[in-house]
Amino acid sequence: MPDYLDKYLAHTIETARAAGASAESIQAQIKEFDEFKALYQNPFFNVAMTFIEPFPVGLIMTLISAAMLRKSAKQKMGS
Image (cartoon, rainbow, N blue to C red; front, top):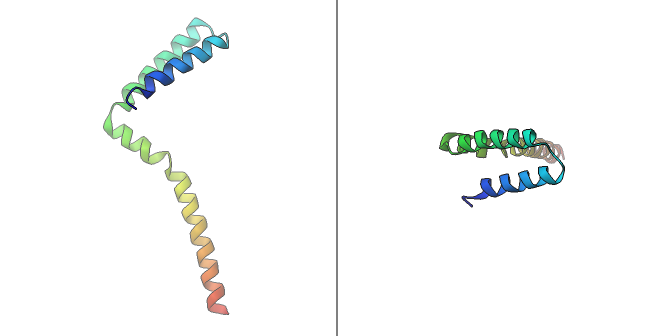
């Protein structure tokens, strides 16, 4: 979805307006979003963000699985 960021910005602005946000606040959101959008156009930043987002969850699940399997293997050896 190449236009996802534009649609997300439009939705965010509409939500802020409905909540009664000031024009200055909305402009600040637009500026912040434009800066993020410029960063996201960089393929290296895009790859880094794509990696960083799921990495902590995957690492935690891996460590939990390893601990469970280690405990299970020790119990089988002791039996």
